[in-house]
Length: 332
Image (cartoon, one colour):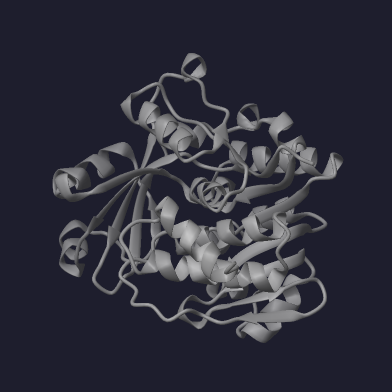
């Protein structure tokens, strides 16, 4: 028995989420629907024109949200990340602790600097737009990878956003190598279409001879494979992953279990905020496959969880909501 179901590596960002409209984007030169990396000056300028009193603040980052989901469903998770010795860094540590996720952060070892922040702007059409200042997490490196946690896990989960820097890519490769040398399965998420569009070759390097599990949405799958339809794209992905999930938003998801394709039906919901839906799907799915559920059952759990996430504001379930979803899946 391993101590952890999943150890994740990825960016540590404090998510500051607020509701806005298209006029805000036009007035402030924000490109809608994308994750855009910005410097601190630009982010602070945007902070000056939003109503921060109504903003929702939580520890996040893509893989951070995923490992928290694993924990909320009853799994054991660890997160390797990097924050600074500042107010938001201390907030991040406390929020991660309250979420039941072990991590590599200690007050004694926090470096001086600025903790990363992600402004998550949600419009009435439920689309999320992100402006991210990475701060100290931009310096994420091999030194931030906890090898013992990886060795003591069923799965290593790698966040695709790390691909944007050489030190981040080196950390991805190092963590993957540690996992493979110790019989730990490797999962990776592409994270965002922009990552695939601009960093495809580095992703090919990280994938190497393949991973055990790959998460992508429909757009990412087609961008990465260079195919213009999903049927061809999913066949091409078999070259890079033994198993994979392609999420399709309101149309559900497709899972390849190593032999066959499984269609996962969506759950009817009224979407008001898509932020964190993919992270939640991955977290619920990873909990499922590391806790005795089949691929189909794990997909159903993930679909339920992500449908709940998009129906509310924010990327995280309440603890009782996670329990309710598990009860619906496995009524006793």
